[in-house]
Length: 320
Ligand SMILES: N[C@@H](CCC(=O)N[C@@H](CS)C(=O)NCC(=O)O)C(=O)O
Image (tube, rainbow, N blue to C red; front, side):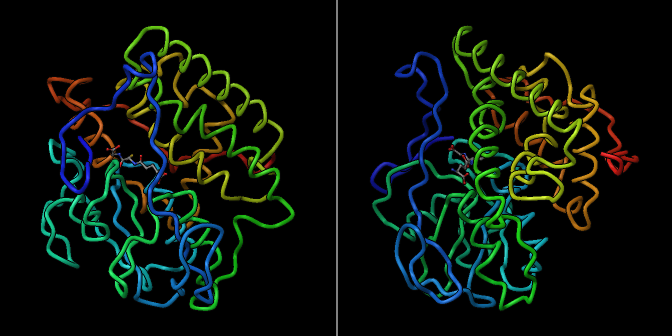
Protein backbone atom coordinates (compact mmCIF):
# COMPACT_ATOMS: atom_id res chain seq x y z
CA UNK A 1 0.00 0.00 0.00
CA UNK A 2 1.38 3.41 -0.86
CA UNK A 3 1.24 6.18 -3.42
CA UNK A 4 3.10 7.90 -6.24
CA UNK A 5 4.75 11.26 -5.57
CA UNK A 6 5.96 12.93 -8.78
CA UNK A 7 6.14 9.55 -10.45
CA UNK A 8 8.04 7.82 -7.63
CA UNK A 9 6.48 5.08 -5.49
CA UNK A 10 6.34 5.66 -1.70
CA UNK A 11 5.22 2.94 0.68
CA UNK A 12 2.89 4.80 3.07
CA UNK A 13 -0.45 3.84 4.69
CA UNK A 14 -3.44 6.23 4.67
CA UNK A 15 -2.89 9.43 6.61
CA UNK A 16 -5.67 9.57 9.20
CA UNK A 17 -3.80 11.81 11.66
CA UNK A 18 -4.68 15.01 9.85
CA UNK A 19 -8.40 14.07 9.92
CA UNK A 20 -8.79 13.02 13.57
CA UNK A 21 -8.61 9.28 12.93
CA UNK A 22 -11.10 9.40 10.06
CA UNK A 23 -10.44 7.72 6.71
CA UNK A 24 -10.89 10.15 3.82
CA UNK A 25 -10.84 8.73 0.27
CA UNK A 26 -8.82 10.72 -2.27
CA UNK A 27 -10.53 12.00 -5.44
CA UNK A 28 -9.64 10.21 -8.67
CA UNK A 29 -7.08 11.97 -10.91
CA UNK A 30 -8.08 11.00 -14.48
CA UNK A 31 -11.55 12.18 -15.41
CA UNK A 32 -12.08 11.99 -19.18
CA UNK A 33 -14.98 10.15 -20.81
CA UNK A 34 -15.39 7.67 -23.63
CA UNK A 35 -18.34 8.87 -25.71
CA UNK A 36 -20.14 7.53 -28.79
CA UNK A 37 -18.71 10.26 -31.03
CA UNK A 38 -15.43 11.05 -29.29
CA UNK A 39 -16.68 14.46 -28.16
CA UNK A 40 -15.65 15.50 -24.66
CA UNK A 41 -17.83 14.26 -21.78
CA UNK A 42 -18.79 16.27 -18.68
CA UNK A 43 -15.12 16.50 -17.62
CA UNK A 44 -11.68 16.02 -19.13
CA UNK A 45 -10.42 15.73 -22.71
CA UNK A 46 -12.15 14.82 -25.99
CA UNK A 47 -10.91 12.15 -28.40
CA UNK A 48 -12.04 8.96 -26.70
CA UNK A 49 -14.53 7.49 -29.16
CA UNK A 50 -16.27 4.23 -28.29
CA UNK A 51 -14.64 1.61 -30.53
CA UNK A 52 -14.48 -2.14 -30.24
CA UNK A 53 -11.12 -3.38 -28.96
CA UNK A 54 -9.74 0.08 -28.18
CA UNK A 55 -10.15 0.13 -24.40
CA UNK A 56 -8.85 -1.98 -21.54
CA UNK A 57 -9.95 -2.23 -17.92
CA UNK A 58 -7.52 -2.81 -15.08
CA UNK A 59 -9.47 -4.24 -12.17
CA UNK A 60 -9.21 -6.04 -8.88
CA UNK A 61 -11.85 -8.73 -8.38
CA UNK A 62 -11.74 -7.84 -4.68
CA UNK A 63 -12.44 -4.14 -5.05
CA UNK A 64 -16.07 -3.03 -4.84
CA UNK A 65 -15.47 0.01 -7.09
CA UNK A 66 -13.78 -2.08 -9.79
CA UNK A 67 -16.54 -4.67 -9.43
CA UNK A 68 -19.11 -2.12 -10.59
CA UNK A 69 -17.28 -1.75 -13.89
CA UNK A 70 -17.13 -5.53 -14.41
CA UNK A 71 -20.89 -5.79 -13.82
CA UNK A 72 -21.55 -3.08 -16.42
CA UNK A 73 -19.12 -4.70 -18.89
CA UNK A 74 -21.06 -7.93 -18.45
CA UNK A 75 -24.61 -6.55 -18.54
CA UNK A 76 -23.91 -4.25 -21.48
CA UNK A 77 -22.42 -7.03 -23.61
CA UNK A 78 -18.95 -5.47 -23.64
CA UNK A 79 -16.81 -8.50 -22.87
CA UNK A 80 -15.71 -8.94 -26.48
CA UNK A 81 -15.12 -5.20 -26.93
CA UNK A 82 -13.23 -4.20 -23.78
CA UNK A 83 -10.33 -6.35 -22.60
CA UNK A 84 -9.42 -6.79 -18.93
CA UNK A 85 -6.39 -7.31 -16.70
CA UNK A 86 -6.94 -8.53 -13.15
CA UNK A 87 -4.50 -7.61 -10.38
CA UNK A 88 -3.39 -10.05 -7.71
CA UNK A 89 -5.59 -10.05 -4.60
CA UNK A 90 -2.47 -9.34 -2.57
CA UNK A 91 -1.75 -5.63 -2.42
CA UNK A 92 1.67 -5.34 -0.81
CA UNK A 93 4.43 -2.71 -0.31
CA UNK A 94 4.38 -1.73 -3.98
CA UNK A 95 0.60 -1.51 -4.13
CA UNK A 96 -1.50 -3.42 -6.63
CA UNK A 97 0.61 -5.96 -8.50
CA UNK A 98 0.08 -8.55 -11.24
CA UNK A 99 0.60 -12.30 -10.66
CA UNK A 100 1.81 -12.53 -14.28
CA UNK A 101 3.11 -9.51 -16.24
CA UNK A 102 -0.01 -7.81 -17.63
CA UNK A 103 -0.86 -8.26 -21.29
CA UNK A 104 -0.42 -4.74 -22.75
CA UNK A 105 3.07 -3.76 -21.59
CA UNK A 106 4.31 -6.62 -19.43
CA UNK A 107 4.13 -4.46 -16.29
CA UNK A 108 4.36 -6.12 -12.88
CA UNK A 109 2.79 -3.26 -10.90
CA UNK A 110 -0.24 -1.07 -11.34
CA UNK A 111 1.80 2.04 -10.53
CA UNK A 112 3.65 1.47 -13.83
CA UNK A 113 0.34 1.90 -15.66
CA UNK A 114 -0.12 5.27 -13.95
CA UNK A 115 3.39 6.51 -14.75
CA UNK A 116 3.05 5.28 -18.35
CA UNK A 117 0.06 7.65 -18.60
CA UNK A 118 1.72 10.47 -16.66
CA UNK A 119 5.37 10.11 -15.79
CA UNK A 120 5.23 12.61 -12.88
CA UNK A 121 1.87 11.44 -11.47
CA UNK A 122 1.15 12.21 -7.83
CA UNK A 123 -1.67 10.36 -6.07
CA UNK A 124 -2.91 6.97 -5.02
CA UNK A 125 -2.73 4.11 -7.47
CA UNK A 126 -6.27 2.80 -7.48
CA UNK A 127 -8.37 0.41 -9.51
CA UNK A 128 -10.43 0.43 -11.65
CA UNK A 129 -8.57 2.12 -14.50
CA UNK A 130 -10.00 2.51 -17.99
CA UNK A 131 -7.06 2.53 -20.41
CA UNK A 132 -7.01 3.72 -24.03
CA UNK A 133 -4.74 1.46 -26.10
CA UNK A 134 -4.73 3.95 -29.00
CA UNK A 135 -3.41 7.04 -27.23
CA UNK A 136 -1.78 4.96 -24.48
CA UNK A 137 -3.24 6.81 -21.56
CA UNK A 138 -5.72 6.52 -18.71
CA UNK A 139 -9.16 7.78 -19.70
CA UNK A 140 -10.58 7.52 -16.20
CA UNK A 141 -9.91 6.02 -12.79
CA UNK A 142 -13.30 6.94 -11.35
CA UNK A 143 -15.67 3.97 -11.30
CA UNK A 144 -18.87 6.00 -10.92
CA UNK A 145 -18.03 7.72 -14.21
CA UNK A 146 -16.74 4.60 -15.98
CA UNK A 147 -20.07 2.83 -15.39
CA UNK A 148 -21.95 5.79 -16.87
CA UNK A 149 -19.74 5.54 -19.98
CA UNK A 150 -20.30 1.80 -20.29
CA UNK A 151 -24.03 2.34 -19.81
CA UNK A 152 -24.42 4.36 -23.03
CA UNK A 153 -21.28 5.08 -25.07
CA UNK A 154 -21.03 1.64 -26.69
CA UNK A 155 -24.75 1.15 -27.46
CA UNK A 156 -24.13 1.34 -31.20
CA UNK A 157 -21.21 -1.05 -30.98
CA UNK A 158 -23.17 -3.71 -29.06
CA UNK A 159 -26.80 -3.00 -29.96
CA UNK A 160 -27.61 -3.37 -26.26
CA UNK A 161 -29.58 -0.33 -25.18
CA UNK A 162 -30.68 -1.38 -21.71
CA UNK A 163 -30.36 1.77 -19.59
CA UNK A 164 -29.36 1.70 -15.93
CA UNK A 165 -29.48 5.48 -15.62
CA UNK A 166 -32.73 6.43 -17.38
CA UNK A 167 -33.57 10.15 -17.59
CA UNK A 168 -36.83 9.82 -15.74
CA UNK A 169 -35.19 8.21 -12.71
CA UNK A 170 -31.98 10.23 -12.59
CA UNK A 171 -32.85 12.39 -9.61
CA UNK A 172 -33.99 9.38 -7.55
CA UNK A 173 -30.87 7.41 -8.53
CA UNK A 174 -28.58 10.36 -7.70
CA UNK A 175 -30.27 10.75 -4.33
CA UNK A 176 -29.70 7.09 -3.46
CA UNK A 177 -26.10 7.22 -4.69
CA UNK A 178 -25.41 10.30 -2.58
CA UNK A 179 -26.75 8.48 0.46
CA UNK A 180 -25.33 4.99 -0.13
CA UNK A 181 -21.80 6.11 -1.09
CA UNK A 182 -20.72 7.89 2.12
CA UNK A 183 -22.72 5.79 4.54
CA UNK A 184 -22.48 2.29 3.07
CA UNK A 185 -19.97 1.89 0.18
CA UNK A 186 -17.35 4.08 1.79
CA UNK A 187 -18.98 3.68 5.21
CA UNK A 188 -17.57 0.18 5.68
CA UNK A 189 -14.07 1.54 4.90
CA UNK A 190 -14.64 4.43 7.30
CA UNK A 191 -15.30 1.81 10.00
CA UNK A 192 -12.39 -0.43 9.06
CA UNK A 193 -9.74 2.23 8.46
CA UNK A 194 -10.69 4.48 11.41
CA UNK A 195 -7.82 4.87 13.83
CA UNK A 196 -9.74 6.33 16.77
CA UNK A 197 -12.67 4.85 18.71
CA UNK A 198 -14.71 7.96 18.07
CA UNK A 199 -14.21 7.96 14.29
CA UNK A 200 -15.06 4.24 14.16
CA UNK A 201 -18.24 4.59 16.23
CA UNK A 202 -19.47 7.51 14.17
CA UNK A 203 -18.94 5.56 10.93
CA UNK A 204 -20.51 2.42 12.47
CA UNK A 205 -23.65 4.29 13.58
CA UNK A 206 -24.04 5.96 10.18
CA UNK A 207 -23.55 2.64 8.41
CA UNK A 208 -26.19 0.72 10.33
CA UNK A 209 -28.66 3.63 10.29
CA UNK A 210 -28.30 3.60 6.50
CA UNK A 211 -28.73 -0.19 6.27
CA UNK A 212 -31.84 0.05 8.48
CA UNK A 213 -33.22 2.68 6.13
CA UNK A 214 -32.40 0.54 3.09
CA UNK A 215 -34.11 -2.47 4.62
CA UNK A 216 -37.27 -0.47 5.36
CA UNK A 217 -37.28 0.94 1.81
CA UNK A 218 -36.84 -2.50 0.27
CA UNK A 219 -39.80 -3.86 2.25
CA UNK A 220 -42.10 -2.05 -0.18
CA UNK A 221 -39.84 -1.32 -3.16
CA UNK A 222 -38.35 -4.08 -5.23
CA UNK A 223 -35.29 -1.96 -6.11
CA UNK A 224 -33.87 1.32 -4.86
CA UNK A 225 -35.42 3.48 -7.58
CA UNK A 226 -38.70 1.52 -7.71
CA UNK A 227 -39.55 -1.35 -9.99
CA UNK A 228 -36.53 -1.46 -12.26
CA UNK A 229 -32.88 -2.24 -11.62
CA UNK A 230 -30.69 0.83 -11.95
CA UNK A 231 -27.13 1.93 -11.40
CA UNK A 232 -28.00 2.67 -7.76
CA UNK A 233 -28.67 -1.05 -7.17
CA UNK A 234 -25.39 -2.17 -8.71
CA UNK A 235 -23.50 0.38 -6.67
CA UNK A 236 -25.11 -0.94 -3.47
CA UNK A 237 -24.70 -4.57 -4.51
CA UNK A 238 -20.90 -4.64 -4.62
CA UNK A 239 -20.72 -3.60 -0.97
CA UNK A 240 -23.58 -5.83 0.19
CA UNK A 241 -22.07 -8.96 -1.36
CA UNK A 242 -18.79 -8.37 0.52
CA UNK A 243 -20.44 -7.48 3.80
CA UNK A 244 -20.88 -10.79 5.61
CA UNK A 245 -17.72 -12.46 4.26
CA UNK A 246 -15.43 -9.48 4.95
CA UNK A 247 -16.78 -6.27 6.43
CA UNK A 248 -18.50 -7.82 9.46
CA UNK A 249 -15.21 -9.24 10.72
CA UNK A 250 -12.33 -7.39 9.08
CA UNK A 251 -13.85 -3.90 9.20
CA UNK A 252 -15.70 -4.47 12.53
CA UNK A 253 -19.13 -3.80 10.96
CA UNK A 254 -20.63 -6.29 13.35
CA UNK A 255 -23.92 -4.98 14.68
CA UNK A 256 -25.52 -7.57 12.43
CA UNK A 257 -25.01 -9.43 9.17
CA UNK A 258 -26.79 -8.73 5.90
CA UNK A 259 -28.24 -12.24 6.22
CA UNK A 260 -30.14 -10.94 9.25
CA UNK A 261 -31.84 -8.18 7.26
CA UNK A 262 -34.94 -9.75 5.77
CA UNK A 263 -35.38 -7.41 2.84
CA UNK A 264 -31.78 -6.52 2.03
CA UNK A 265 -30.80 -10.19 2.02
CA UNK A 266 -33.52 -11.14 -0.48
CA UNK A 267 -32.55 -8.11 -2.61
CA UNK A 268 -28.89 -9.11 -2.51
CA UNK A 269 -29.77 -12.63 -3.65
CA UNK A 270 -31.99 -11.35 -6.44
CA UNK A 271 -29.25 -9.09 -7.82
CA UNK A 272 -26.71 -11.89 -7.50
CA UNK A 273 -29.01 -14.11 -9.57
CA UNK A 274 -29.32 -11.67 -12.49
CA UNK A 275 -27.83 -13.46 -15.52
CA UNK A 276 -24.05 -13.04 -15.65
CA UNK A 277 -23.63 -11.28 -12.32
CA UNK A 278 -22.56 -14.28 -10.20
CA UNK A 279 -19.64 -14.76 -12.63
CA UNK A 280 -18.33 -11.32 -11.66
CA UNK A 281 -18.18 -12.25 -7.94
CA UNK A 282 -14.94 -13.95 -6.90
CA UNK A 283 -15.09 -14.81 -3.20
CA UNK A 284 -11.53 -16.10 -3.13
CA UNK A 285 -10.13 -12.76 -4.33
CA UNK A 286 -12.51 -10.81 -2.09
CA UNK A 287 -11.60 -12.56 1.16
CA UNK A 288 -7.96 -13.03 0.36
CA UNK A 289 -7.41 -9.38 -0.58
CA UNK A 290 -8.76 -7.77 2.54
CA UNK A 291 -7.57 -10.24 5.15
CA UNK A 292 -4.14 -10.72 3.57
CA UNK A 293 -3.29 -7.22 2.34
CA UNK A 294 -4.22 -5.13 5.37
CA UNK A 295 -1.59 -6.47 7.73
CA UNK A 296 -2.02 -3.55 10.11
CA UNK A 297 -5.62 -4.71 10.66
CA UNK A 298 -4.98 -8.48 10.44
CA UNK A 299 -1.27 -9.08 11.22
CA UNK A 300 -1.51 -12.90 11.07
CA UNK A 301 -2.93 -12.72 7.53
CA UNK A 302 -5.13 -15.70 8.39
CA UNK A 303 -8.20 -15.69 6.13
CA UNK A 304 -11.41 -16.86 7.85
CA UNK A 305 -13.23 -19.83 6.33
CA UNK A 306 -16.83 -18.70 6.78
CA UNK A 307 -19.52 -17.73 6.36
CA UNK A 308 -21.46 -20.31 4.35
CA UNK A 309 -23.96 -18.41 2.26
CA UNK A 310 -26.11 -19.64 -0.61
CA UNK A 311 -26.82 -16.59 -2.71
CA UNK A 312 -28.52 -18.79 -5.31
CA UNK A 313 -31.27 -19.76 -2.83
CA UNK A 314 -34.77 -18.43 -3.62
CA UNK A 315 -34.85 -14.68 -3.04
CA UNK A 316 -38.60 -14.33 -2.53
CA UNK A 317 -38.71 -10.82 -4.00
CA UNK A 318 -41.33 -11.51 -6.72
CA UNK A 319 -44.19 -10.24 -4.58
CA UNK A 320 -42.61 -6.91 -3.49
N1 LIG B 1 -12.74 6.77 -6.73
C1 LIG B 1 -12.28 5.51 -7.02
C2 LIG B 1 -11.90 4.72 -5.78
C3 LIG B 1 -11.26 3.44 -6.14
C4 LIG B 1 -10.50 2.84 -4.96
O1 LIG B 1 -10.32 3.48 -3.92
N2 LIG B 1 -10.01 1.59 -5.14
C5 LIG B 1 -9.26 0.92 -4.10
C6 LIG B 1 -9.48 -0.57 -4.12
S1 LIG B 1 -10.98 -1.10 -3.44
C7 LIG B 1 -7.79 1.09 -4.35
O2 LIG B 1 -7.34 0.86 -5.44
N3 LIG B 1 -7.06 1.47 -3.31
C8 LIG B 1 -5.64 1.58 -3.36
C9 LIG B 1 -5.15 2.75 -2.58
O3 LIG B 1 -5.98 3.52 -2.05
O4 LIG B 1 -3.94 2.91 -2.48
C10 LIG B 1 -13.34 4.76 -7.82
O5 LIG B 1 -14.50 4.63 -7.36
O6 LIG B 1 -13.03 4.35 -8.91
